[in-house]
Length: 467
Image 1 (spheres, rainbow, N blue to C red):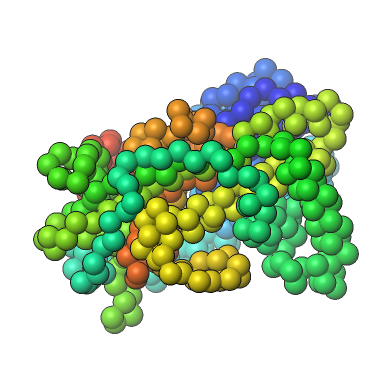
Image 2: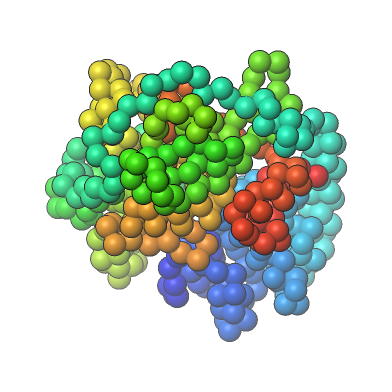
């Protein structure tokens, strides 16, 4: 295995001798394709483990077509699907494009793609299947009724008469004294099993009739390594949080330099749901949860970035030197779970202390995992705010890289990968939602507000465009 880079789209290249070249997490398309040519590979495989990968895989397919590639393209990973591959990726590349449901089926698919006898029939049936998926998708999407942007804005969420709570401080605070042992109780284990392609929720999965035995073995291995990494301090946890004066202005959140609100520091741009809702249900936009300027009430927005990936490279190198792929994957999975746990822990501390808008909160761990508390922490690139480029503003406001060592790649992924960042909203009725499909009127309005070229905005939001 040759590790030739970090910060990429989870990429795998399969060579003539079936050697695997692993490029890591979030690599630019040009590096993937350049490596494919240099190594004369037979297959390019893209693994979408995080949502930025979805749009990036479409870009890679387009570039493969533009540059004249003909080798097969395999698609996989936790955030991908057969429908996404059929609708968004395959139409852009004339070479074979195949979705692989899980890692165990990768060898079989690769064998079909490289077999002189099997490839043609395999691709004929696959293309017919994907064509059918696209037709079904087209029919489903055409039935979706959309508001114009103007109508959607008229149906916005009413901020109401909430009295915002003043945070303990305004500005930025670094937190680097949280022991890993503190975070263990905040771990949500269900996504851990999904990392290993095991479907089911924890703890029920441990007693599953089909995969329970294997799940329990995996869980026991995880507990053993978790205890060791905590006791021996393999990793460090570091966070930065910040609170800022803010107002909602249309679909934007205006952030000010200080409490006087005399000078703008930043404008955060958000998207609004445009799908037609049942009567009485609003078309949400995150800016609705910040006091509008007209209310005259001072309000605030928070931001955070946390990582538990400091020190992970040294341990991963040790495992690689020992050819211990299992331990390497296990450590990455545990570091990711600890990062999410750290985000959960910090949100609790913010609600009860640093912002204090829910200082009397008393909930158990299950309620915590189910987010049964006041306030939300949406992350740029996820359903409520799907534009990853807004993450750059969060990093600038919190000076994230200097304060935590988390870096932002060209694709707006975070490195180390065991990191979480996002915004804090305190409004008691703030909630997570999916922006869903937006129409061209909102795309054009959004690009104008951001000062971004329309084609660039279209690329970043391609998965959300209604056709």
